[in-house]
Length: 324
Ligand code: F6P
Image 1 (tube, rainbow, N blue to C red):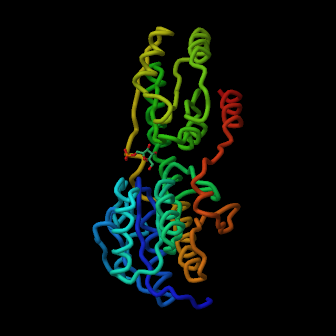
Image 2 (tube, helix red, strand yellow; image 1 turned 135 degrees about the horizontal axis):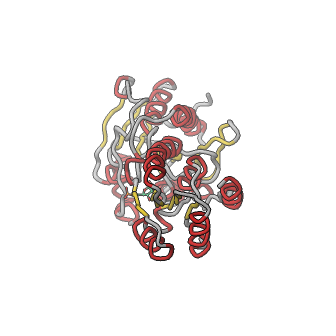
Image 3 (tube, helix red, strand yellow; image 1 turned 90 degrees about the horizontal axis):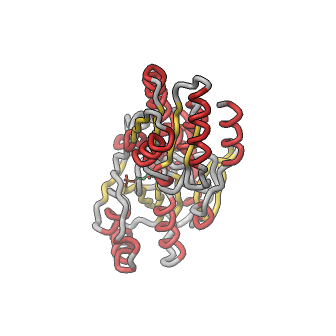
C-alpha cells in the first residue's frame, strides 16, 4: 500500500443504527491496525465529535461484535453539526486527538456531514453506507437493509397466519420515511396484495374495488404493506373499513426492524466495505463513499451517494399484481 500522511483515523456511526454496523466498526478497526494506523472511536456520531467523546480502539475492543446488532459506538442524529459552530468544534476534537482521517458510517444525512468536513474544511473523510433504508446511490446494498427486511418479513408471516384464520385485512406499516425499499421488498417476499410507498402515487379507490371484488369471489384475507413515509397504517385501515365494510386491523412494526443479529449478507457487506474505506484513506482518496455493485467494491463521490436512489417500482407493482 502506498504511503500517505494518515497515521490515525477516527470512526463514528451516525443516524439511525442498522444491524451490521458493528461488523463495519470491527473491519475498519482491524484493517487500520493491520496497516499500522491508530484508531479512535467517536461516540454518538457527530454529537460525540462536537463534545469530544472519543475512545481508543484496539484489536480486543472489537472482539465478539461481528454478530451483534446496534453499534458499540452508539449513534445520534446531530442538528448541531449542521451549524458552522458545531463543525468548528468537531474539527477541534479531531485536531486535539491528532486524527487525520475519518470513516463515517451512516445514511444520507451522515454522508452530507462527511462531505461538508471534506469539501468545506478539507478534512479527509470516507463514508460507509449504514442505513436499513437502502436508499444510497452507488451501492446495491446498505448495512442493515437485509436484516431489516428479514425481520419485517418474519413478522408479516406471523400476521398472515392470523389474517387467514380470522378472515381479516391487515395493514402493516414498515420503516422508511423517505424510502419504499423495505416496504417493496417485504411486500413481494410476503406475497402481499398491495404496497404503499413514497415513490409511487397509490390508487386507494382501485384497492377498495379489488378488495370488495376479491371478497365476493371468496378471497378471505388481504395484506397491505405501507412505508412509514407514505401513510399511517391506522388511518389506512380505518378508510378501508369505511369504504369496503370489511374487517381490518393494523400493525406498526417500528423499531423492531432496526435491531437483531445481522444477516450473513449484512455482515459480509460491512466487513468488505469497512476494509475498503481504510484502504481509500491510505491511498489519499477522500470525500468518497464505498459500496458494492455486482459483487465488486464500488467508489462514488459522497455527494452522488446521497442523491435519490431509483427503485424498480414499476416492475415490483406489475409482479405483485400478476402474482396476487
Ligand atoms: O434510519 C432510517 C430509519 O430507520 C427510517 O427507516 C425511519 O423512517 C427512521 O430511521 C426512524 O428514525 P427514528 O429512529 O429517529 O425515529
